[in-house]
Amino acid sequence: MIASTSIDRPHGWRARFGLLQPAPAPHNIPYEFYLMAPEGVVLAVTSFDVRVPDDRSSVAALKEAYEGGLSRLDAAAATLGKTNVDVIIQVGLPPVLTQGWGFERQLVERVARVTSAPLVVGATACVDALQALGLTRIAVLNPWDTYAAGLKEYVANAGISVLGMGPVPTAAGDVEGQAPRVALEAGEALFKATPGAQGLWITGAFMPCVTIIDELERRIGAPVVTNLQALLWAGLRAAKVVAPVTGFGRLFDVK
Image (cartoon, rainbow, N blue to C red; front, top):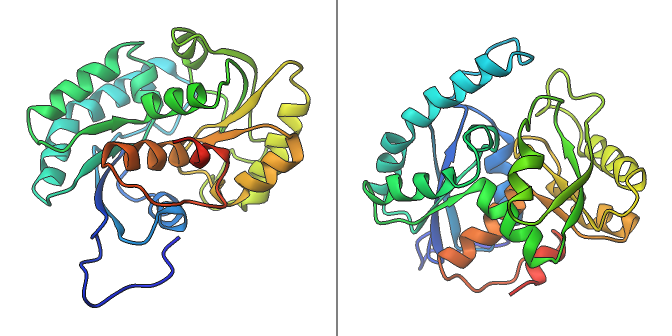
């Protein structure tokens, strides 16, 4: 967490992150990023503008919306590249999951053609985080039922089994506007109702949850991975930043 600043250093003296987020105006993602980020790490934000339909129950309509956003991702990455970022992180699991395992490598190759800043794909960061923590059997908490269609099949390619999955009960409306306690209590209940799970993955980077990671790990006695937490962890590694991050889960103890 940023505790102080210096007038003798640029704000991004450790690293400049570029954020590719699917929707133009989520407020939680930058806010929770800065709660976790070490001093000297800053964030430049743009969107690849996924235009999600009002009816999220239509898988076909959602996939069409995701593909439309992905067609705009290269231009958004090029915009970030012009700001001299050190690494680009991509938020949004569904656009990648719906394209299937291996699509993340295509995104990395596409972005490499428009900027020298490496791309960290959200799905890759989460899988890497789960593997780094030794988690092969997990429970998954989603913002809503259709958020992560294809997730089980996707992570199975990495040797990870989803033993239990469920939505946040009160997240049908303003997901960003709910209190972090909602994810805390739902995550605890889901994990305890999933025999054999070694850890919990909370999807939906826009859902308020990073402030409850430590408390949730204490309650369930197991590691917790969230999308934004995993992206910061992976992004720091990609940018070769060595700095302590405390209070946001066991993941940051993995070197």
